[in-house]
Amino acid sequence: MGSFVTHRIGPVVSRDELQYRAELRLMDPAVVRLELAGISPDGARFRLRNTIVRVDGRTAATVTSTIGWLDLAERRLTTPPDDLRRLVADLPRTEDFAELPSLEPR
Image (cartoon, rainbow, N blue to C red; front, side, top):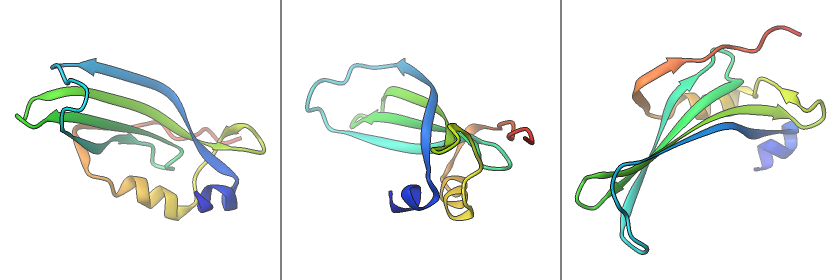
């Protein structure tokens, strides 16, 4: 959070896709797996996938979010500082990982 304040940027979700696969009841134990499903070469856009897995191994749901780094002053997508870009880029990748488009020069 401190890095967001320092660099005056924040993540903004432009799309969420949710797929329900199996029932998960309130208070049922589950594991959430976070993986990188895509990123642009400049790191400005990325796609994260959360897979919610029941204790019996069945996938209960997947949530795939397309996210960009928002410049809080200009209210436009921007490239993140290297430390944030690496943090996202180093996440484990999905089997269907895909490169996303970079920002166009202003």
